Length: 565
Ligand code: HEM
Image (cartoon, rainbow, N blue to C red; front, side, top):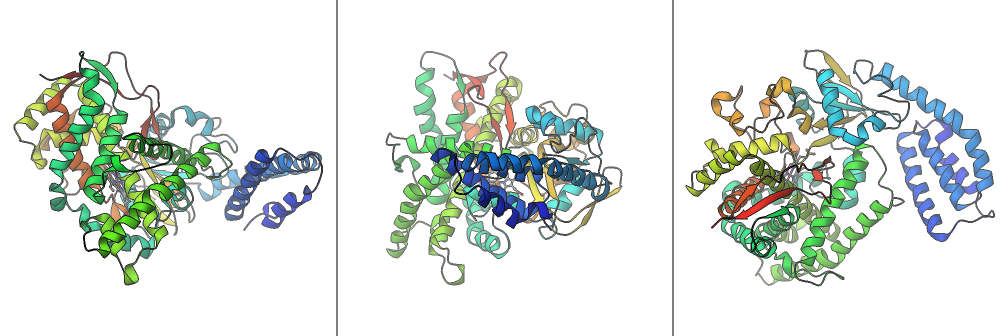
Protein backbone atom coordinates (compact mmCIF):
# COMPACT_ATOMS: atom_id res chain seq x y z
CA UNK A 1 0.00 0.00 0.00
CA UNK A 2 1.24 3.48 -0.80
CA UNK A 3 1.14 5.91 2.10
CA UNK A 4 -1.43 8.61 1.24
CA UNK A 5 1.32 11.16 0.86
CA UNK A 6 2.79 9.17 -2.03
CA UNK A 7 -0.34 8.06 -3.85
CA UNK A 8 -0.20 8.27 -7.63
CA UNK A 9 -3.02 10.82 -7.62
CA UNK A 10 -1.05 13.05 -5.26
CA UNK A 11 1.89 12.86 -7.61
CA UNK A 12 -0.34 13.81 -10.52
CA UNK A 13 -1.74 16.61 -8.41
CA UNK A 14 1.76 17.85 -7.71
CA UNK A 15 2.54 17.89 -11.37
CA UNK A 16 -0.76 19.50 -12.35
CA UNK A 17 -0.42 22.21 -9.72
CA UNK A 18 2.28 24.02 -11.58
CA UNK A 19 0.92 23.50 -15.08
CA UNK A 20 0.46 26.63 -17.13
CA UNK A 21 2.16 28.89 -14.61
CA UNK A 22 4.89 31.42 -15.32
CA UNK A 23 8.63 30.84 -15.15
CA UNK A 24 9.05 27.95 -17.61
CA UNK A 25 12.42 26.22 -17.74
CA UNK A 26 14.32 25.67 -21.03
CA UNK A 27 12.89 22.83 -23.23
CA UNK A 28 15.80 20.42 -22.61
CA UNK A 29 15.39 20.79 -18.85
CA UNK A 30 11.65 20.33 -19.21
CA UNK A 31 12.16 17.05 -21.11
CA UNK A 32 14.58 15.80 -18.48
CA UNK A 33 12.27 16.86 -15.67
CA UNK A 34 9.24 15.23 -17.27
CA UNK A 35 11.10 12.00 -17.81
CA UNK A 36 12.32 12.09 -14.19
CA UNK A 37 8.75 12.73 -13.05
CA UNK A 38 7.53 9.68 -14.96
CA UNK A 39 10.21 7.36 -13.61
CA UNK A 40 9.77 8.54 -10.06
CA UNK A 41 6.01 8.20 -10.24
CA UNK A 42 6.44 4.63 -11.45
CA UNK A 43 9.01 3.91 -8.73
CA UNK A 44 6.76 5.37 -6.02
CA UNK A 45 3.67 3.57 -7.34
CA UNK A 46 5.56 0.26 -7.17
CA UNK A 47 7.24 0.57 -3.86
CA UNK A 48 5.80 3.31 -1.72
CA UNK A 49 7.75 4.61 1.24
CA UNK A 50 10.38 6.23 -0.95
CA UNK A 51 9.80 9.75 0.21
CA UNK A 52 12.92 10.87 -1.58
CA UNK A 53 11.04 10.25 -4.81
CA UNK A 54 8.46 12.83 -3.82
CA UNK A 55 11.13 15.36 -2.97
CA UNK A 56 12.72 14.78 -6.37
CA UNK A 57 9.36 15.06 -8.13
CA UNK A 58 8.86 18.40 -6.47
CA UNK A 59 12.28 19.50 -7.70
CA UNK A 60 11.45 18.26 -11.20
CA UNK A 61 8.14 20.09 -11.26
CA UNK A 62 9.85 23.19 -10.03
CA UNK A 63 12.22 22.99 -12.98
CA UNK A 64 9.35 22.48 -15.39
CA UNK A 65 6.66 24.79 -14.11
CA UNK A 66 6.11 27.09 -11.19
CA UNK A 67 9.10 27.36 -8.90
CA UNK A 68 7.33 29.36 -6.22
CA UNK A 69 4.33 27.04 -5.76
CA UNK A 70 6.54 23.96 -5.76
CA UNK A 71 8.95 25.41 -3.24
CA UNK A 72 6.03 25.94 -0.89
CA UNK A 73 4.89 22.35 -1.49
CA UNK A 74 8.38 21.04 -0.95
CA UNK A 75 8.83 23.01 2.25
CA UNK A 76 5.53 21.73 3.58
CA UNK A 77 5.94 18.12 2.52
CA UNK A 78 9.60 17.34 2.84
CA UNK A 79 10.00 17.20 6.65
CA UNK A 80 7.04 14.87 7.32
CA UNK A 81 7.92 12.76 4.28
CA UNK A 82 11.54 12.37 5.39
CA UNK A 83 10.47 11.65 8.97
CA UNK A 84 8.01 9.00 7.72
CA UNK A 85 10.68 7.42 5.53
CA UNK A 86 13.21 7.28 8.36
CA UNK A 87 10.60 5.78 10.68
CA UNK A 88 9.80 3.20 7.99
CA UNK A 89 13.50 2.37 7.57
CA UNK A 90 13.89 1.81 11.34
CA UNK A 91 10.69 -0.24 11.43
CA UNK A 92 12.12 -2.47 8.70
CA UNK A 93 15.50 -2.69 10.35
CA UNK A 94 14.38 -3.61 13.87
CA UNK A 95 11.04 -5.36 13.30
CA UNK A 96 10.89 -6.87 9.84
CA UNK A 97 14.62 -7.69 9.51
CA UNK A 98 15.24 -7.92 13.28
CA UNK A 99 17.23 -11.18 13.00
CA UNK A 100 19.57 -9.81 10.34
CA UNK A 101 22.73 -8.05 11.54
CA UNK A 102 23.74 -4.84 9.88
CA UNK A 103 26.45 -2.23 10.40
CA UNK A 104 25.63 0.22 13.21
CA UNK A 105 25.34 4.01 12.97
CA UNK A 106 27.21 5.97 11.53
CA UNK A 107 28.13 3.31 8.94
CA UNK A 108 24.39 2.87 8.37
CA UNK A 109 22.81 6.32 8.09
CA UNK A 110 19.14 7.30 7.96
CA UNK A 111 18.02 7.05 4.32
CA UNK A 112 21.59 7.18 2.97
CA UNK A 113 22.20 3.75 4.45
CA UNK A 114 25.69 2.38 3.68
CA UNK A 115 25.92 4.25 0.40
CA UNK A 116 28.31 6.93 1.68
CA UNK A 117 30.77 4.48 3.25
CA UNK A 118 30.47 1.79 0.58
CA UNK A 119 30.50 3.87 -2.59
CA UNK A 120 34.27 4.42 -2.87
CA UNK A 121 35.13 0.72 -2.45
CA UNK A 122 31.96 -1.33 -2.47
CA UNK A 123 33.65 -4.74 -2.56
CA UNK A 124 36.02 -3.93 0.28
CA UNK A 125 33.11 -2.68 2.37
CA UNK A 126 31.10 -5.86 1.87
CA UNK A 127 34.12 -8.07 2.55
CA UNK A 128 34.71 -6.28 5.87
CA UNK A 129 31.04 -6.72 6.76
CA UNK A 130 31.00 -10.39 5.80
CA UNK A 131 34.01 -11.12 8.01
CA UNK A 132 32.20 -9.56 10.97
CA UNK A 133 28.65 -10.78 10.44
CA UNK A 134 28.27 -14.51 9.83
CA UNK A 135 27.63 -14.50 6.10
CA UNK A 136 24.00 -13.32 6.23
CA UNK A 137 23.61 -9.59 6.82
CA UNK A 138 21.93 -6.44 5.54
CA UNK A 139 23.31 -3.94 3.05
CA UNK A 140 21.56 -0.58 2.88
CA UNK A 141 21.98 0.82 -0.62
CA UNK A 142 20.16 4.09 0.15
CA UNK A 143 16.42 4.69 0.51
CA UNK A 144 14.33 2.80 3.04
CA UNK A 145 14.78 -0.80 2.03
CA UNK A 146 17.79 -3.05 2.69
CA UNK A 147 19.23 -5.85 0.59
CA UNK A 148 19.76 -9.25 2.21
CA UNK A 149 23.36 -10.24 1.51
CA UNK A 150 23.72 -14.00 1.29
CA UNK A 151 27.39 -14.93 1.51
CA UNK A 152 27.36 -18.48 2.83
CA UNK A 153 27.64 -21.31 0.30
CA UNK A 154 24.63 -23.31 1.49
CA UNK A 155 22.34 -20.28 1.67
CA UNK A 156 23.58 -18.96 -1.69
CA UNK A 157 22.76 -22.30 -3.29
CA UNK A 158 19.35 -22.33 -1.58
CA UNK A 159 18.61 -18.93 -3.12
CA UNK A 160 19.92 -19.62 -6.62
CA UNK A 161 18.56 -23.15 -6.63
CA UNK A 162 14.98 -22.04 -6.12
CA UNK A 163 13.68 -19.95 -8.99
CA UNK A 164 10.19 -20.04 -7.46
CA UNK A 165 11.03 -18.62 -4.06
CA UNK A 166 13.80 -16.38 -5.45
CA UNK A 167 13.06 -15.41 -9.06
CA UNK A 168 14.95 -12.74 -10.94
CA UNK A 169 13.13 -9.60 -9.89
CA UNK A 170 12.68 -5.98 -10.80
CA UNK A 171 16.46 -5.44 -11.10
CA UNK A 172 16.51 -7.64 -14.16
CA UNK A 173 13.19 -6.46 -15.61
CA UNK A 174 13.70 -2.72 -15.12
CA UNK A 175 17.47 -2.30 -15.22
CA UNK A 176 18.99 -5.06 -17.36
CA UNK A 177 15.76 -4.89 -19.36
CA UNK A 178 16.72 -1.50 -20.80
CA UNK A 179 19.49 -3.24 -22.73
CA UNK A 180 18.54 -6.92 -22.86
CA UNK A 181 14.76 -6.48 -23.25
CA UNK A 182 13.17 -9.83 -22.49
CA UNK A 183 16.03 -12.05 -23.66
CA UNK A 184 17.56 -15.12 -22.06
CA UNK A 185 19.13 -13.27 -19.11
CA UNK A 186 16.04 -11.27 -18.18
CA UNK A 187 13.00 -13.35 -19.12
CA UNK A 188 11.29 -15.70 -16.70
CA UNK A 189 8.83 -18.61 -16.81
CA UNK A 190 7.87 -20.18 -20.14
CA UNK A 191 9.55 -17.49 -22.21
CA UNK A 192 12.88 -18.26 -20.55
CA UNK A 193 12.36 -22.03 -20.77
CA UNK A 194 11.58 -21.78 -24.49
CA UNK A 195 14.73 -19.77 -25.27
CA UNK A 196 16.86 -22.25 -23.32
CA UNK A 197 15.21 -25.14 -25.15
CA UNK A 198 15.93 -23.59 -28.55
CA UNK A 199 19.49 -22.45 -27.82
CA UNK A 200 20.77 -25.08 -25.39
CA UNK A 201 22.19 -27.56 -27.91
CA UNK A 202 24.48 -24.94 -29.50
CA UNK A 203 26.31 -24.52 -26.19
CA UNK A 204 26.94 -28.23 -25.62
CA UNK A 205 30.63 -29.05 -25.12
CA UNK A 206 31.18 -31.64 -27.89
CA UNK A 207 29.60 -29.35 -30.48
CA UNK A 208 31.70 -26.38 -29.38
CA UNK A 209 35.01 -28.24 -29.80
CA UNK A 210 34.64 -27.89 -33.60
CA UNK A 211 35.05 -24.11 -33.22
CA UNK A 212 38.51 -24.30 -31.59
CA UNK A 213 40.49 -23.79 -34.85
CA UNK A 214 38.45 -20.73 -35.94
CA UNK A 215 38.75 -19.21 -32.44
CA UNK A 216 42.55 -19.68 -32.61
CA UNK A 217 42.61 -18.05 -36.07
CA UNK A 218 40.63 -15.07 -34.74
CA UNK A 219 43.12 -14.67 -31.89
CA UNK A 220 46.03 -14.68 -34.33
CA UNK A 221 44.58 -12.23 -36.83
CA UNK A 222 43.45 -9.82 -34.10
CA UNK A 223 46.89 -10.01 -32.44
CA UNK A 224 48.66 -9.43 -35.79
CA UNK A 225 46.58 -6.30 -36.23
CA UNK A 226 46.41 -4.83 -32.72
CA UNK A 227 49.58 -5.97 -30.98
CA UNK A 228 52.37 -7.01 -33.30
CA UNK A 229 52.92 -3.65 -34.97
CA UNK A 230 53.41 -2.14 -31.52
CA UNK A 231 55.89 -4.83 -30.54
CA UNK A 232 58.11 -4.47 -33.62
CA UNK A 233 60.58 -2.29 -31.71
CA UNK A 234 60.70 -4.37 -28.56
CA UNK A 235 58.64 -4.87 -25.38
CA UNK A 236 55.65 -2.64 -24.86
CA UNK A 237 53.15 -1.95 -22.04
CA UNK A 238 49.66 -2.65 -23.38
CA UNK A 239 46.18 -2.19 -21.93
CA UNK A 240 44.76 -5.58 -22.88
CA UNK A 241 41.07 -4.65 -22.65
CA UNK A 242 40.49 -3.60 -26.25
CA UNK A 243 42.17 -6.66 -27.69
CA UNK A 244 40.30 -9.20 -25.58
CA UNK A 245 36.95 -7.49 -26.09
CA UNK A 246 37.34 -7.52 -29.85
CA UNK A 247 38.77 -11.02 -30.02
CA UNK A 248 36.02 -12.54 -27.82
CA UNK A 249 33.31 -10.62 -29.69
CA UNK A 250 34.62 -11.91 -33.01
CA UNK A 251 34.95 -15.43 -31.61
CA UNK A 252 31.41 -15.40 -30.24
CA UNK A 253 29.89 -14.06 -33.45
CA UNK A 254 31.78 -16.49 -35.64
CA UNK A 255 31.05 -19.60 -33.65
CA UNK A 256 27.48 -18.97 -32.45
CA UNK A 257 25.87 -16.85 -35.18
CA UNK A 258 28.28 -17.47 -38.10
CA UNK A 259 28.91 -13.76 -38.53
CA UNK A 260 32.06 -11.78 -39.20
CA UNK A 261 31.57 -8.65 -37.15
CA UNK A 262 34.24 -6.84 -39.19
CA UNK A 263 31.68 -6.62 -42.01
CA UNK A 264 28.93 -5.03 -39.91
CA UNK A 265 27.74 -1.52 -40.80
CA UNK A 266 26.72 1.31 -38.49
CA UNK A 267 26.27 4.98 -39.30
CA UNK A 268 29.35 6.95 -38.25
CA UNK A 269 31.51 3.82 -37.80
CA UNK A 270 32.63 3.08 -41.34
CA UNK A 271 36.31 2.19 -40.76
CA UNK A 272 37.21 -1.50 -40.73
CA UNK A 273 36.65 -2.92 -37.24
CA UNK A 274 35.04 0.31 -35.97
CA UNK A 275 31.68 -1.36 -35.29
CA UNK A 276 33.37 -4.11 -33.27
CA UNK A 277 35.21 -1.50 -31.18
CA UNK A 278 32.00 0.49 -30.70
CA UNK A 279 29.89 -2.52 -29.67
CA UNK A 280 32.60 -3.79 -27.29
CA UNK A 281 32.95 -0.34 -25.67
CA UNK A 282 29.20 0.18 -25.29
CA UNK A 283 28.68 -3.26 -23.74
CA UNK A 284 31.29 -2.51 -21.05
CA UNK A 285 29.79 0.93 -20.53
CA UNK A 286 26.30 -0.63 -20.22
CA UNK A 287 27.59 -3.14 -17.71
CA UNK A 288 28.86 -0.30 -15.51
CA UNK A 289 25.71 1.76 -15.76
CA UNK A 290 23.31 -1.13 -15.14
CA UNK A 291 25.52 -2.42 -12.30
CA UNK A 292 25.57 0.90 -10.47
CA UNK A 293 21.83 1.46 -10.87
CA UNK A 294 21.20 -2.06 -9.65
CA UNK A 295 23.46 -1.84 -6.65
CA UNK A 296 22.19 1.49 -5.39
CA UNK A 297 18.62 0.84 -6.57
CA UNK A 298 18.46 3.91 -8.78
CA UNK A 299 15.73 3.87 -11.46
CA UNK A 300 17.00 3.51 -15.04
CA UNK A 301 15.46 6.86 -15.90
CA UNK A 302 16.33 8.60 -19.13
CA UNK A 303 16.74 11.71 -17.02
CA UNK A 304 20.31 10.42 -16.46
CA UNK A 305 22.56 11.26 -19.42
CA UNK A 306 24.37 7.92 -19.11
CA UNK A 307 21.09 6.01 -19.36
CA UNK A 308 20.09 8.12 -22.38
CA UNK A 309 23.40 7.33 -24.07
CA UNK A 310 22.96 3.63 -23.36
CA UNK A 311 19.38 3.56 -24.67
CA UNK A 312 20.42 5.44 -27.81
CA UNK A 313 23.38 3.20 -28.63
CA UNK A 314 21.29 0.12 -27.99
CA UNK A 315 18.51 1.37 -30.29
CA UNK A 316 21.01 2.19 -33.06
CA UNK A 317 22.66 -1.23 -32.90
CA UNK A 318 19.29 -3.01 -32.83
CA UNK A 319 17.96 -1.05 -35.82
CA UNK A 320 21.05 -0.74 -37.98
CA UNK A 321 23.01 -3.89 -37.20
CA UNK A 322 20.79 -6.61 -35.78
CA UNK A 323 17.56 -6.10 -37.74
CA UNK A 324 19.30 -6.33 -41.16
CA UNK A 325 21.15 -9.37 -39.86
CA UNK A 326 17.85 -11.06 -38.91
CA UNK A 327 16.39 -10.23 -42.33
CA UNK A 328 19.44 -11.65 -44.12
CA UNK A 329 19.17 -14.81 -42.08
CA UNK A 330 15.44 -15.16 -42.80
CA UNK A 331 16.24 -15.02 -46.51
CA UNK A 332 18.89 -17.71 -46.06
CA UNK A 333 16.43 -19.91 -44.17
CA UNK A 334 13.88 -19.48 -46.98
CA UNK A 335 16.57 -20.39 -49.53
CA UNK A 336 17.58 -23.42 -47.47
CA UNK A 337 21.13 -22.04 -47.18
CA UNK A 338 21.28 -21.06 -43.50
CA UNK A 339 24.09 -22.37 -41.25
CA UNK A 340 23.07 -24.47 -38.25
CA UNK A 341 23.64 -22.01 -35.40
CA UNK A 342 21.89 -20.03 -32.65
CA UNK A 343 20.59 -17.33 -34.98
CA UNK A 344 19.08 -19.78 -37.46
CA UNK A 345 17.50 -21.71 -34.58
CA UNK A 346 15.85 -18.52 -33.32
CA UNK A 347 14.78 -17.25 -36.73
CA UNK A 348 13.48 -20.62 -37.95
CA UNK A 349 11.43 -21.42 -34.81
CA UNK A 350 7.76 -21.55 -35.73
CA UNK A 351 4.35 -22.40 -34.33
CA UNK A 352 4.17 -21.99 -30.56
CA UNK A 353 7.93 -21.55 -30.43
CA UNK A 354 8.06 -18.64 -32.93
CA UNK A 355 9.95 -15.49 -31.92
CA UNK A 356 8.64 -12.03 -32.89
CA UNK A 357 11.04 -9.40 -34.29
CA UNK A 358 11.33 -7.82 -30.85
CA UNK A 359 11.99 -11.21 -29.26
CA UNK A 360 14.70 -11.94 -31.82
CA UNK A 361 16.35 -8.57 -31.21
CA UNK A 362 16.22 -9.11 -27.43
CA UNK A 363 17.82 -12.54 -27.76
CA UNK A 364 20.54 -11.28 -30.10
CA UNK A 365 21.48 -8.29 -27.95
CA UNK A 366 21.57 -10.59 -24.92
CA UNK A 367 23.71 -13.25 -26.54
CA UNK A 368 26.19 -10.85 -28.10
CA UNK A 369 26.42 -8.77 -24.90
CA UNK A 370 26.61 -11.62 -22.37
CA UNK A 371 28.63 -13.77 -24.77
CA UNK A 372 31.79 -11.69 -24.99
CA UNK A 373 32.20 -9.07 -22.23
CA UNK A 374 32.49 -11.78 -19.56
CA UNK A 375 35.04 -13.89 -21.45
CA UNK A 376 36.96 -10.74 -22.36
CA UNK A 377 37.36 -9.61 -18.77
CA UNK A 378 38.28 -13.12 -17.71
CA UNK A 379 41.12 -13.11 -20.27
CA UNK A 380 42.25 -9.66 -19.10
CA UNK A 381 42.52 -10.75 -15.45
CA UNK A 382 44.11 -14.03 -16.52
CA UNK A 383 46.79 -12.20 -18.52
CA UNK A 384 47.42 -9.89 -15.56
CA UNK A 385 47.83 -12.80 -13.13
CA UNK A 386 50.18 -14.65 -15.48
CA UNK A 387 52.25 -11.50 -15.91
CA UNK A 388 52.49 -11.12 -12.15
CA UNK A 389 53.37 -14.80 -11.62
CA UNK A 390 56.10 -15.72 -14.13
CA UNK A 391 56.66 -19.15 -12.55
CA UNK A 392 53.02 -20.14 -13.16
CA UNK A 393 53.25 -18.65 -16.66
CA UNK A 394 56.30 -20.75 -17.52
CA UNK A 395 54.72 -23.95 -16.20
CA UNK A 396 51.50 -23.28 -18.08
CA UNK A 397 53.36 -22.51 -21.32
CA UNK A 398 55.18 -25.83 -21.04
CA UNK A 399 51.95 -27.72 -20.34
CA UNK A 400 50.07 -26.08 -23.22
CA UNK A 401 52.91 -26.56 -25.71
CA UNK A 402 53.09 -30.27 -24.85
CA UNK A 403 49.32 -30.52 -25.47
CA UNK A 404 48.81 -31.80 -21.92
CA UNK A 405 45.97 -29.51 -21.01
CA UNK A 406 43.36 -32.19 -20.61
CA UNK A 407 40.77 -30.46 -18.52
CA UNK A 408 40.29 -32.58 -15.36
CA UNK A 409 43.79 -32.41 -13.88
CA UNK A 410 45.62 -29.73 -15.79
CA UNK A 411 47.41 -26.64 -14.53
CA UNK A 412 45.26 -24.76 -17.07
CA UNK A 413 42.14 -25.74 -15.15
CA UNK A 414 43.70 -24.66 -11.86
CA UNK A 415 44.75 -21.32 -13.34
CA UNK A 416 41.27 -20.73 -14.79
CA UNK A 417 39.62 -21.55 -11.47
CA UNK A 418 42.03 -19.40 -9.50
CA UNK A 419 41.52 -16.41 -11.82
CA UNK A 420 37.75 -16.85 -11.57
CA UNK A 421 38.01 -17.16 -7.80
CA UNK A 422 39.86 -13.88 -7.35
CA UNK A 423 38.13 -12.12 -10.24
CA UNK A 424 34.69 -13.68 -10.70
CA UNK A 425 33.71 -11.75 -13.80
CA UNK A 426 30.08 -11.65 -12.67
CA UNK A 427 30.84 -10.54 -9.13
CA UNK A 428 27.30 -10.82 -7.80
CA UNK A 429 23.71 -11.50 -8.80
CA UNK A 430 20.43 -10.37 -7.28
CA UNK A 431 17.11 -12.05 -6.73
CA UNK A 432 13.75 -11.00 -5.33
CA UNK A 433 12.10 -13.07 -2.60
CA UNK A 434 8.66 -14.20 -3.79
CA UNK A 435 7.85 -16.25 -0.67
CA UNK A 436 9.14 -15.72 2.89
CA UNK A 437 11.95 -18.27 3.25
CA UNK A 438 14.33 -19.30 6.03
CA UNK A 439 18.06 -19.35 5.32
CA UNK A 440 20.74 -20.71 7.65
CA UNK A 441 23.85 -18.69 8.55
CA UNK A 442 27.38 -19.93 9.25
CA UNK A 443 26.49 -20.80 12.83
CA UNK A 444 23.37 -22.77 11.99
CA UNK A 445 21.00 -19.96 13.01
CA UNK A 446 17.91 -19.40 10.88
CA UNK A 447 17.16 -16.04 9.35
CA UNK A 448 13.89 -15.37 7.56
CA UNK A 449 13.98 -13.50 4.25
CA UNK A 450 10.71 -11.53 4.15
CA UNK A 451 8.63 -11.68 0.98
CA UNK A 452 9.51 -8.86 -1.41
CA UNK A 453 13.13 -8.52 -0.17
CA UNK A 454 15.94 -7.90 -2.61
CA UNK A 455 18.65 -10.51 -2.17
CA UNK A 456 22.30 -10.10 -3.15
CA UNK A 457 24.51 -13.14 -3.73
CA UNK A 458 28.08 -11.80 -3.90
CA UNK A 459 30.35 -14.39 -5.53
CA UNK A 460 33.44 -12.21 -5.22
CA UNK A 461 32.93 -12.03 -1.50
CA UNK A 462 32.47 -15.75 -0.92
CA UNK A 463 35.57 -16.38 -3.04
CA UNK A 464 37.75 -14.30 -0.75
CA UNK A 465 36.53 -15.24 2.71
CA UNK A 466 39.38 -16.63 4.86
CA UNK A 467 36.93 -18.90 6.68
CA UNK A 468 36.26 -20.68 3.37
CA UNK A 469 39.66 -20.45 1.66
CA UNK A 470 42.20 -20.09 4.46
CA UNK A 471 44.39 -17.20 5.57
CA UNK A 472 45.93 -16.90 2.11
CA UNK A 473 42.49 -16.32 0.52
CA UNK A 474 43.72 -13.14 -1.19
CA UNK A 475 46.78 -14.81 -2.78
CA UNK A 476 46.92 -16.16 -6.34
CA UNK A 477 47.79 -19.83 -5.92
CA UNK A 478 46.49 -22.17 -8.64
CA UNK A 479 47.85 -25.15 -6.72
CA UNK A 480 45.28 -24.68 -4.00
CA UNK A 481 43.04 -26.54 -6.47
CA UNK A 482 45.21 -29.68 -6.52
CA UNK A 483 43.05 -32.64 -5.47
CA UNK A 484 44.94 -33.28 -2.23
CA UNK A 485 44.72 -29.60 -1.27
CA UNK A 486 40.97 -29.37 -1.59
CA UNK A 487 38.56 -29.94 1.21
CA UNK A 488 35.86 -31.02 -1.22
CA UNK A 489 35.60 -32.25 -4.78
CA UNK A 490 32.80 -31.65 -7.20
CA UNK A 491 31.86 -33.09 -10.52
CA UNK A 492 29.77 -30.06 -11.37
CA UNK A 493 30.78 -26.95 -13.26
CA UNK A 494 33.11 -25.93 -10.48
CA UNK A 495 33.48 -26.49 -6.78
CA UNK A 496 29.95 -25.62 -5.76
CA UNK A 497 30.21 -27.31 -2.37
CA UNK A 498 32.68 -24.67 -1.24
CA UNK A 499 30.52 -21.86 -2.57
CA UNK A 500 32.56 -21.42 -5.74
CA UNK A 501 29.86 -20.49 -8.25
CA UNK A 502 31.48 -18.37 -10.98
CA UNK A 503 28.88 -19.45 -13.52
CA UNK A 504 25.93 -19.26 -11.15
CA UNK A 505 23.85 -22.15 -9.84
CA UNK A 506 20.46 -23.74 -10.41
CA UNK A 507 18.07 -23.12 -13.29
CA UNK A 508 19.73 -19.84 -14.30
CA UNK A 509 23.28 -21.20 -14.55
CA UNK A 510 25.33 -19.64 -17.35
CA UNK A 511 24.37 -21.16 -20.68
CA UNK A 512 27.73 -20.18 -22.18
CA UNK A 513 30.16 -21.62 -19.61
CA UNK A 514 31.53 -24.31 -21.94
CA UNK A 515 32.13 -21.74 -24.67
CA UNK A 516 33.88 -19.49 -22.14
CA UNK A 517 36.12 -22.35 -21.00
CA UNK A 518 36.95 -23.23 -24.61
CA UNK A 519 37.89 -19.63 -25.38
CA UNK A 520 40.08 -19.51 -22.28
CA UNK A 521 41.93 -22.66 -23.31
CA UNK A 522 42.48 -21.53 -26.91
CA UNK A 523 43.32 -17.92 -26.06
CA UNK A 524 45.79 -18.78 -23.30
CA UNK A 525 47.41 -21.33 -25.60
CA UNK A 526 47.91 -18.76 -28.37
CA UNK A 527 48.85 -15.97 -25.96
CA UNK A 528 51.64 -17.90 -24.26
CA UNK A 529 52.85 -19.35 -27.54
CA UNK A 530 53.32 -15.89 -29.05
CA UNK A 531 54.31 -13.69 -26.11
CA UNK A 532 56.03 -13.51 -22.76
CA UNK A 533 53.96 -11.48 -20.32
CA UNK A 534 55.65 -9.35 -17.69
CA UNK A 535 54.48 -7.30 -14.79
CA UNK A 536 54.42 -3.52 -15.28
CA UNK A 537 56.23 -2.34 -12.12
CA UNK A 538 53.96 -0.41 -9.76
CA UNK A 539 50.83 -1.05 -11.84
CA UNK A 540 47.60 -2.20 -10.19
CA UNK A 541 44.21 -1.92 -11.93
CA UNK A 542 41.30 -0.09 -10.30
CA UNK A 543 38.54 -2.67 -10.42
CA UNK A 544 34.87 -1.77 -10.19
CA UNK A 545 32.02 -4.13 -9.41
CA UNK A 546 29.19 -3.54 -11.88
CA UNK A 547 27.27 -6.27 -13.61
CA UNK A 548 30.76 -7.48 -14.40
CA UNK A 549 34.09 -6.69 -12.77
CA UNK A 550 35.29 -3.86 -14.96
CA UNK A 551 38.32 -1.66 -14.86
CA UNK A 552 38.46 2.06 -14.82
CA UNK A 553 39.96 3.72 -17.85
CA UNK A 554 42.38 5.29 -18.61
CA UNK A 555 44.37 3.10 -16.22
CA UNK A 556 43.12 -0.07 -17.85
CA UNK A 557 44.71 -3.48 -17.34
CA UNK A 558 48.35 -3.11 -18.31
CA UNK A 559 50.69 -5.94 -19.09
CA UNK A 560 54.23 -5.74 -20.52
CA UNK A 561 54.44 -7.79 -23.74
CA UNK A 562 57.58 -9.30 -25.24
CA UNK A 563 57.37 -11.24 -28.50
CA UNK A 564 58.72 -14.77 -28.31
CA UNK A 565 61.31 -15.49 -30.94
C1 HEM B 1 34.04 -16.04 -17.93
C2 HEM B 1 32.93 -16.06 -18.61
C3 HEM B 1 31.56 -16.07 -18.02
C4 HEM B 1 31.15 -15.94 -16.72
C5 HEM B 1 32.01 -15.77 -15.48
C6 HEM B 1 29.70 -16.00 -16.71
C7 HEM B 1 28.93 -15.95 -15.57
C8 HEM B 1 27.57 -16.06 -15.56
C9 HEM B 1 26.76 -16.10 -14.37
C10 HEM B 1 27.29 -16.02 -12.95
C11 HEM B 1 25.47 -16.24 -14.74
C12 HEM B 1 24.27 -16.39 -13.83
C13 HEM B 1 23.54 -15.07 -13.66
C14 HEM B 1 22.41 -15.16 -12.67
O1 HEM B 1 22.22 -16.18 -12.03
O2 HEM B 1 21.72 -14.13 -12.49
C15 HEM B 1 25.44 -16.26 -16.19
C16 HEM B 1 24.31 -16.35 -16.95
C17 HEM B 1 24.30 -16.29 -18.31
N1 HEM B 1 25.40 -16.29 -19.13
FE1 HEM B 1 27.31 -16.32 -18.59
N2 HEM B 1 29.26 -16.15 -17.99
C18 HEM B 1 30.35 -16.20 -18.82
C19 HEM B 1 30.35 -16.38 -20.19
C20 HEM B 1 29.22 -16.45 -20.96
C21 HEM B 1 29.23 -16.68 -22.38
C22 HEM B 1 30.45 -16.91 -23.27
C23 HEM B 1 27.93 -16.64 -22.78
C24 HEM B 1 27.49 -16.85 -24.20
C25 HEM B 1 26.33 -16.56 -24.66
C26 HEM B 1 27.10 -16.38 -21.60
C27 HEM B 1 25.73 -16.24 -21.57
C28 HEM B 1 24.96 -16.22 -20.44
C29 HEM B 1 23.51 -16.18 -20.44
C30 HEM B 1 22.62 -16.07 -21.68
C31 HEM B 1 23.09 -16.23 -19.12
C32 HEM B 1 21.67 -16.25 -18.59
C33 HEM B 1 21.25 -17.71 -18.47
C34 HEM B 1 19.84 -17.89 -17.97
O3 HEM B 1 19.36 -17.08 -17.17
O4 HEM B 1 19.24 -18.90 -18.35
N3 HEM B 1 27.94 -16.30 -20.52
N4 HEM B 1 26.73 -16.16 -16.66
